[in-house]
Image 1 (cartoon, chains in turn green, orange):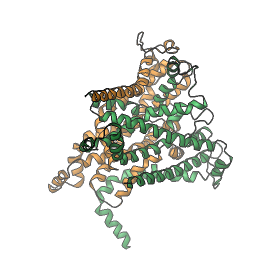
Image 2 (spheres, rainbow over the protein chains, first blue to last red; image 1 turned 60 degrees about the vertical axis):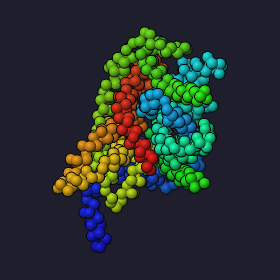
Image 3 (cartoon, chains in turn brown, red; image 1 turned 180 degrees about the vertical axis):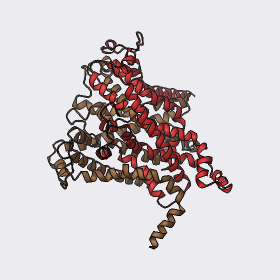
Image 4 (cartoon, rainbow over the protein chains, first blue to last red; image 1 turned 120 degrees about the vertical axis):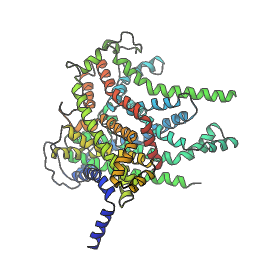
Length: 302
Length: 279
């Protein structure tokens, strides 16, 4: 009774914010929290789009099938790590380099900063169209320019050969993703006060030394957050790979995110697809915690 | 002096390289969209615009070709409704988050921040199930319901930032003058955040417009199929024959978001980066 009246008191005293937030909270509970709980539950069922429309509880069988009986699953997990860390690292390096350029005094700086972001707003399907054409085995731009420059002596189907397909995807992902990384790092760079640089100048630190000993340490907190966000978003990024290769050839470029779709909507195995999604969520959570720990530990160093 | 000059030249060269990497794939898309297919399927890429034609654009929109009109309309509806609802809920939620201290506020802020972690494949199957149950599969309202999960958290966050940048004294004065808390929000503060609100809802429009993955699993016919999905199907059907038409369709699909982005860029960038630096 006492708790109830206290609850009533809290509600009435904070009526305005609660009323303002009520529709959003109701929505988020039904369309963000419920789906996550639902996918955990469905992973324990045999739900199938054709064969088993009413989910039947089957315990951990989907998981044991994936881990013990699925010959492709190990490769897909490894791919997920290559994709996530490869893509994030490349985007970080180019994003940082571009951020440093666009933070310097340049004519038309605002214009370049805006233009740089164009790939970021380009629809993913259009990104797929552009890069599939660049990588085309007969008419592609990449083949033409590499052979003309003498770097290649035959035409390559970039998205079709085992050795070239990952570099090709990572390059396209770099193009699409580096602008956002750059935008955030640039914001971080702008918070570094000018007198820090002036002090470094007085101490004789210029060029690369200034970057290494002054800029990067001060940028670390922003960099840690931005890369963490990029890791998570890349982990769940089904679209980039799907528009380029659909996870192929065979399962060569499948990651957990594409495998959820393949299982669920190509093979109609919604239960098994949910198990892939569940594993994917759990693993990225662990990766996040480890990454956050590591970056915070580094901060404590003198 | 000469060392400084060399550094500056190096900087320009680096800028030119990055911009070439960023823009040349794009330039190729635009150039090809104005070319006959016979000129695209050549071993030697031709960047000149001589012999430019609008035939590809006619094909993209015409009933005998891509027939994209209906899908553009579907997408405008879905993205427009998403933007509208996001604007209303985002303004309300953002205001509450910016101006009130209440039990649960920190938890909610964290939940909003973390929700992008669970977008896309992790929730695809539940979304499909929910819309099946609601009988909203392959409908525009169904798409809007799902798109809000992409736009609402970030837009509440953005709006909170815009409200925070306004001085509290504004509402205090209004309250002293006998305004209700809601009146102070609706009549005093909201008009001042119109630029921020416009940027936020246009951003929601762009996010919904650019969606591919949810349309892929949730729509199946002209009734609700979006432009991104029909574009990807054009690629499947005509990828070997009509590249020019596909490139033109790609340009048409991209143009609205690039234009919107140019308009909102300043406010959006400010809002997004402020959030990242604070968290």
